[in-house]
Length: 152
Image 1 (cartoon, rainbow, N blue to C red):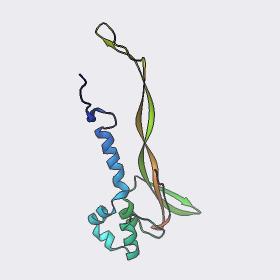
Image 2: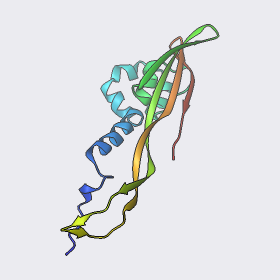
Image 3: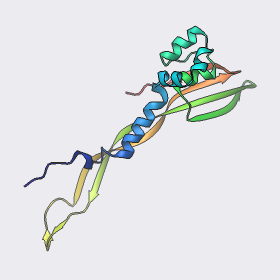
Image 4: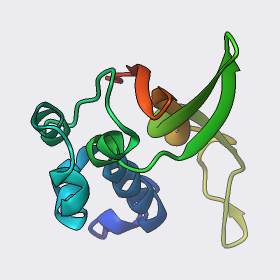
């Protein structure tokens, strides 16, 4: 008799993987939540920036507060200079899954003998890696450059 498969036993369904996926979505997708937590920051923005923030957009001239409300807290902050001017760069990371071919070496024994099966078992699993999802450069507390990578 074959028992029904337990969906929670698969490697693709694990609490740590689910937690990572949900955590990576939070950074750049909830401007409404950040606005509700920081209403004073939002109210201090010019009206044209308020609309961009609500849409989760960034453009040149925005303040760090506006970028924070639109995209969230960066995972990394870098200081640098270009042409003698100090720059501050905020870096946002995303997480993506990539398929990985797996090979399990072995066989098995049932009682006193081999129960069959292959010595090698090929399968497919997924690994996760971080990628730079977005960057914002500030000069004198104003956005001078931004980029956002769109994945799949």
